[in-house]
Length: 231
Image (cartoon, rainbow, N blue to C red; front, top):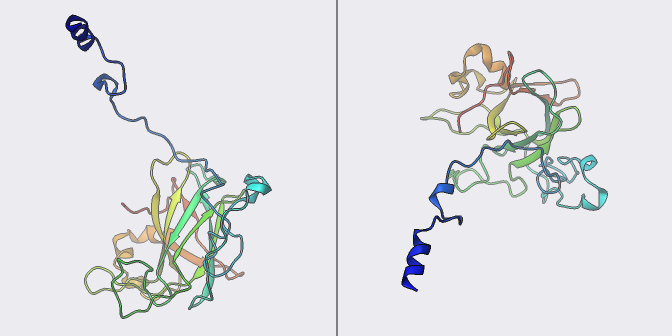
């Protein structure tokens, strides 16, 4: 019996604890997205109760059930619409990307315990987070509130901006960028914009179109590549 146990212990192990099986986990690209659970209807509407955000054409009607906008009342501030097209390195629109938004409220405070400015009230009707799938033409769209200014490094103030995260096929991690407004107060002194070469700052500046939508295209690669920030 002892000899048999010794032979077993000496034999090669083939279970999942065998160090010979360990190694680097293979990389996987992100997307295409499972539209039943990621972009949800209402996820891109931070000021109303529309279905903006998901792609109903990518799921059967009986699955288009999850969620609606979580807005509980009218948020304070100026309601705006922001939009843009996501382009790949060849300049082609990406119809299956996803964009997340994170921003301060109209008074310049984030709905987060990390924002310790108790002197600025939270808006009970504004959470500052949203998610939008791109449509067939590669366009994302949000309805939100124009944000106020938030503190920057030292005693500086940042210009009003919205943080955007881009997810898409071929990306191993999200890409982080910002949307500033062409007429934003403090653009010329913003400490983060100042880190960006002047000739590339335009890739972060949204312009207002005749339909009053603030528009910012996002280029993942190429000569017009958007400025992305390290996480």
